[in-house]
Length: 131
Image (tube, rainbow, N blue to C red; front, side, top):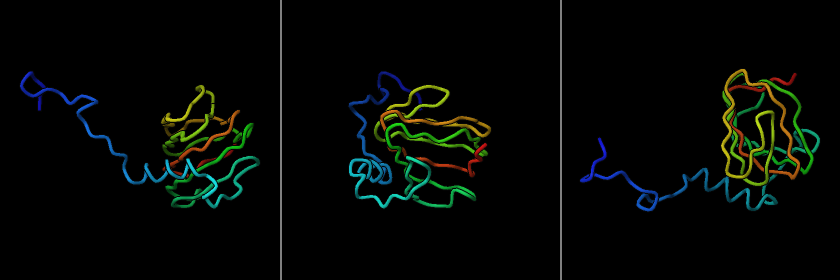
């Protein structure tokens, strides 16, 4: 369908915005991190698995970085989607603040750090290989 004067494109004000259930739920969790049963993932980084197993196939998790925490160099065998829910994290591509969606393609090699601490939603197509 083409947009025209008689059929204008929707504007930000005219489109009702409702977060999908999983996004709304994850955002609520980020607002109350003490309600999550976190487990140690690495020094200074905790994990709460949402589905799958990070060692095989697709998986998703919430990760909570303490201020100054980092994850060492690793390579992605499949796509990785990171939604920064609170705080900020950085990698070789720059600083990613709350609200940023980062997509890493297969073969991406990077390390991640969080100076201030953060909570992110991570979705992996394939397991990560630490190098």
